[in-house]
Image 1 (cartoon, rainbow, N blue to C red):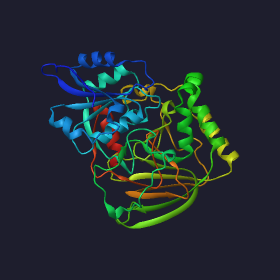
Image 2: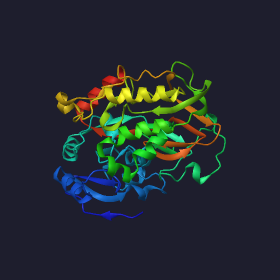
Image 3: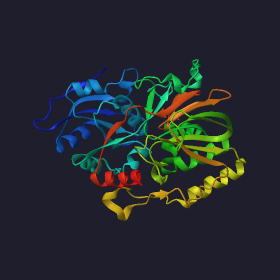
Amino acid sequence: MPAQRADARAGGERAVLVSSPAAGSAVGVEQLVERLEHIGVSVALRLLVSDLDHTQPQGAIWRDAGYDLVIAAGGDGTVGAVATQLVGSGLPMAILPLGTANDVARSFYLPMDVTQACGILAAAVPMDIDVGQVIPGLVEPGAYSVAHGEATPALTLVDDPSPLAGVCFLHTLTLGLNVEFARLATDVQRRQRLGSLTYAASALEAVTRYRPVDVTLHIFGIEGTGATEERVIQSRVVQVSVINTPVFGGKLGVRLPDISLDDRLLDFMLIEAVDVQQLRQTVRHLLDSIIQEPGQAHPASQANQVEQPLEGMGTHLPGIRRFRARAAVIETAEAVDVTLDGEIRTHTPVLVRVGPQGLRVLTSPQAKRLLTRTTRG
C-alpha cells in the first residue's frame, strides 16, 4: 500500500490521513497537514482512499502500529470507505468534510469549514455508533456494479457472515431513484457547469428518468419482534433507502427525525411507485420549501442552525413505508445497482444489516450530548 511517513510530534497524537483527490474542496493535503500539526496532531501516514480499494481491513494493524486516530478527509464515500477499515478496532475516526454533500459530517454537527472542523478535532470526544454492513460489496466505487456482471450467491441471515465480510456504510444504502441521482450529481462536468444548482437540477432530472423497481425484502428483527423473525415485503418502488445517520441532501440539510445512532437497528424507507408527474411536483415542492442558501449547521452556532426536519417539508409522498429492523435481504426481478454513501458499490441481491461491530467517531462534546439525547429519546 503506498504511503508517506513523517515523524510524530513529541507528545502529540499520531494520525493516519486518508484523503480523496476527487473531493470538492480546494484545500490540499499539505494545507491539511499544516492545520493538523497546529492543533497537535502529527500525520504519520498519508493515503489516498483508492489505496484502500483492495485491502483487508487495516484498523487493527494501524492500532497495533501505534496510530492514535484515522482522519477521513473527503466526502461521504471516503468516510464510508474508512469506516470499513476501522469497525471493531476501537481506533477512532475523525471527519474533515471536503466533499460535496458531507451528509455524515452534517449528521455529527461538524462545521463545513475545514479550519473550524480542525478546531473541533482539537477538543473532540469519542462516540460509539452503529454502522450498516452490506454483503457482498467492494470499497472501490463501481467495481461491483451490474455492468461487471458478477454472479451473486443466495444470501440468508442464517449464514451469519464474518464481521470482516462485505463493506460498511455510515449514511445510507439506496437503490432506485437515488442511484440515477448519484450518477448525475457526481458527474464532474455537470458539477462544474451547474455549481450550487447541481443537486436541485439532478434531483428533477432523476425524477424524470426514473423507472419503478420490483423489490422483495426478507426482513429480520423488525423493531418489537424477535431478532430472527422474518417478514416479507413485496412492492413496486421508486426507491429503497436503508438509513444509519439522519441528515441528507447536502446543503439542503434535511434531518430525518428519530434516527438513533446506537440502537442496533437500521431505518428502512420505501417510496412506492406513484404517477411520475405527482412525484415530480412533490420533489419540486420539497426543494421550494427548503432554504436555498443555508449556513453552517452545528451546535457551536445555534443562530445559524438551518437544518430542516423531515416533517412539514412537503415530504408527504403517497406510498411511503418506514420501519426499523436489524437486517434484510433485498432482491429485485433484475439486478440493479446499489449505492453506499452516495457511490455505487454493489448490486442486488444484497444482505444489509447492522454491523456486528461498531465504530468510534470523534465529535464535539456538545454534538455528542445532542446526539445522545436523540438516541436515548
